[in-house]
Image (cartoon, rainbow, N blue to C red):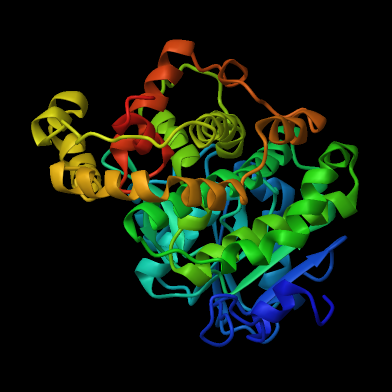
Length: 427
């Protein structure tokens, strides 16, 4: 990486914070992106504070692709405990505890995989107070270096505090050979920057919630290259793959410097999480990033419609704790209500919001429109790579998707355009 590379500067602590306050800092110490890491797997750990006893965590597929190779390489440096999960493991508390128990005698965890394996290891290692590193096997999501993990707790998918990896090691050859759907999933997960930024900015301008520019400044150069060159991703082009990988990492670093997933996860992710929670297990298997490709277009259409319209007028939310218990059951309803009640509009908050919308809508609209991308442009980015753009391509029934869009706002505390639309009678 050259000296003006934002990733290199983040690791070195020399990237100036666009929001002021000195330089940006991240917990990750090493990022290696190379055409191939074959023969250099153990060298990647040089100088990192991991100890000699390592638990290598993979699933049946990632163990075959890279895990076995990593275990052999690291075995020459110390003791290795191999933890191989079945294919398609769930990122939930139960499996995280099993990983924690299996690696209890080890000094650190080594994740070999992508979204689910990484989330499980970052969560389990944080609980155990141990460091971890990750060897990526697919460019399918932006969570490699984030500080949170998507973990399901009693049926409620949550973004829980975890920790960043000490090191991230990405072999572009392996990533380019990943299943096409996983590559398209990574593109889908990268697509939501405009909708997430618009939602976060809305909450800031309407309610004064904290907001930062840093995550988006970090992404500017690499996101543009990725979006414009998305068609090359499916041709084995390593330069295009590097643009995707860098965008995913920088998106994750953006959440790390903010200490939350706000810059990369808003309404589009709520719809996806709702589908994870309430979808039918008999439907075709699909990846998180594929969900985000589709849900981003839905949210972008809604944002475009509202930003091109008159100032919304909101009314208070009628839903209460009893409504949530009836809609989701006692336990899950209580959990969702605890989240939703933090943003719920009562009469006082609705009146205050209407004052802002009446007096400042033109300013708010102009500021948000500057960070969005036209729906047609976003759709083109996906189509050039053959990525899904419609719910039916994921096997989601139309009626279910309509319900997901209308109810997704009920499961989290973030105020997004889904809430503004619902509160103003548009949704």
